[in-house]
Length: 127
Image 1: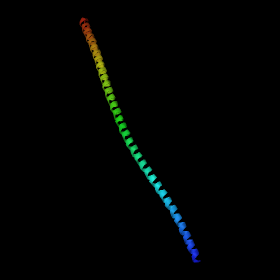
Image 2 (image 1 turned 60 degrees about the vertical axis):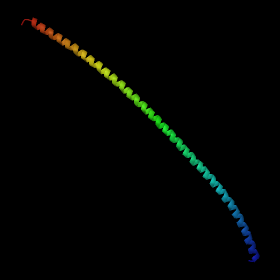
Image 3 (image 1 turned 180 degrees about the horizontal axis):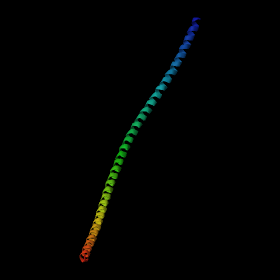
Image 4 (image 1 turned 30 degrees about the vertical axis):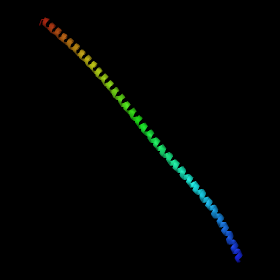
């Protein structure tokens, strides 16, 4: 090939390469800008996630406290109810005991009276 054609082609290829390099540089800068935007978004997302974690932690602690209060209230209720029921059972036991005692005393009196009648009858009867 002749020298002029080679030189012409080389110049043409050099210009083409410069245009490609310029385009690639532009594309590289755009990718860098996109990367920076993604990094900022990722950082915002990480910050938001941390904020949500903190908020969830606060809510969880509040919920734990409320559950503890409910449990304590329920324990107090159960204890009070147990005390009331125990007092009622004790009162009913005392009433039942008194009724049995009264019935026993009454039966004992009847037995004593019957024994006295039998003894009186035995004394009066001629053998």
